[in-house]
Length: 282
Image (cartoon, rainbow, N blue to C red; front, side, top):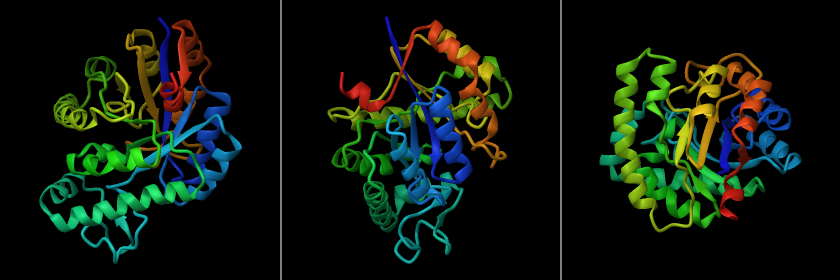
């Protein structure tokens, strides 16, 4: 049985170094798609590069935590600081999205603005996912689904990584990984209830959550050899520049995407490299 594999890069548009890594990994490596931060410093550059590389599927990387907003700070004061950035505070923002109606109204306006900005860049919307997976927060996901449908997205990321494989590869931070797995199991259940009945696609497995920022070659080779799902996504954070933070863009991910050994492992298992629009057309 042919197994289908989406290989995605997050944070497209965040910087020129990330943009360069995405295009290099698509042209010379195994990368098939990327998720665009529409308010990133290099978003317009990313859109132009995507148009020059039409085989690269591009989706929206929704930012509702730890990143720049599209709307000015005066429009969404419950969400961002004076500079217009969401704080790196997922728990605090998550509680605010749950319990403050004013925050949810502002969030709805910001999400709509991000989809509108994506459309204005002239790109076809492949899929939707979220920075730090905040898109799976119940309040965010509820707003996201109708927008994804309205703007023609073909898929949405619902995180389901392999905890056992991650712990076998790297047993550090074991308790944190187990707790994260439990939290996202609840978020996944909530998301799938809302997701049912839509025309959007999600995949059986998503790899990258437990190894975010550390998608080294040995880990990816292990998962390519052991995964049995008919459809899966692996996501990376590549850059041609230095590591930006512990969990974010880093040159190790780019090396893995360009690795001949990784490409050989894909071929050996008859993985079919694809993207969400190609899966949706089947």
